[in-house]
Image 1 (cartoon, helix red, strand yellow):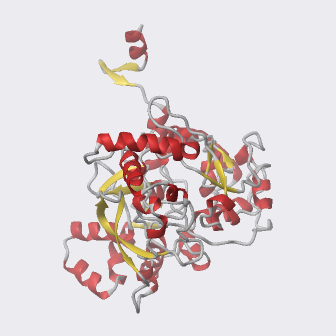
Image 2 (cartoon, rainbow, N blue to C red; image 1 turned 30 degrees about the vertical axis):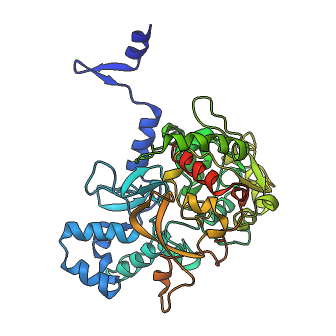
Image 3 (cartoon, rainbow, N blue to C red; image 1 turned 120 degrees about the vertical axis):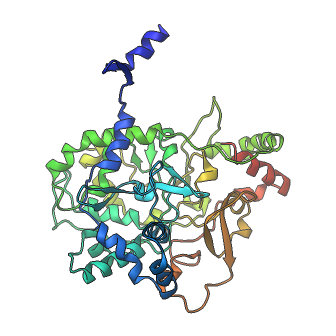
Length: 445
């Protein structure tokens, strides 16, 4: 019987047995090959971006080989290279005409300790800086500005590298659609509360029934289509792509959390597991073959983390989504007053730094030591802190003097609006040895 089941997954092609393509396989292929948006720029623009860099970086790029310069451009803007390819980007579809079109991996394909992992948060992405520089080069090359270039004039795309104003992108795009997805410029857009978000790890989507930081949307494939609701994509076109996004969701839910790469003190981790189950599992769930995730929303008054994300979606906006095609007209209910944030699953948590919904906490050690969270910090590009489990950083009492706006984007300043690292003080109930044990256990999830 088992052999029959295995053979049922295969078909004969040219005398060879070939594995049947799955929905998840199609989802990855669609994400990396099909354009749902207009191009952001073309290859000629990309290759000239270094020409508008600050003098020191520009001088280095000018002396570099084309291959070295491409790697410098990728590094400068947080563009990830597709695994298995030396030149192809992960976060863009490159058309036969060499036009670059953003896909979901721009934010959800990141680099951890120097290795690109599809589905990991892209904590390197410098989206606003990239868009600014693209606009400058287009003007030099006498090319038209794109939707992203124009959007960046009025909306901040991200004030700190690795985070974006993605929630507000969705608010604007959703609000200009009627319940049947027809674009209507006369519809009212709510007051916009701009703020930055850290993209969540995709490999935990399978454990959730609801998505987003406040778990207000019931998970379905239509919700994933929010970011392609630009005016040129009319309702009929949007709906014709629905099957594609069923496959994309299947791909996302096929992802497994990466395993911690370095040695683990198994004895200490076992101690940490018991402490975690006693103190943390009621919200974050249990792990292993019999693991259970409660998907618990914690009231903001108890959690005390930054409230701006919660406040940014007005009740009327949430209520409109409950009547929308995106929620299947309420069959996939929208929570109109979530009241707090959901405690996320922690599978692969070692690889999803920085932490909290706004990306304000650089390591798990800092999560466990609330009083020690840095006020201002800056990460290295590929360094990984194995002791504190997370980003390798330098911390600062204040921002260095005379920084340009683009230089400030490489620092995370927790005093800024929507960027607080406060709250989630539960670890204060643990003593230092218990915290060490829990930190070791978190490496194993």
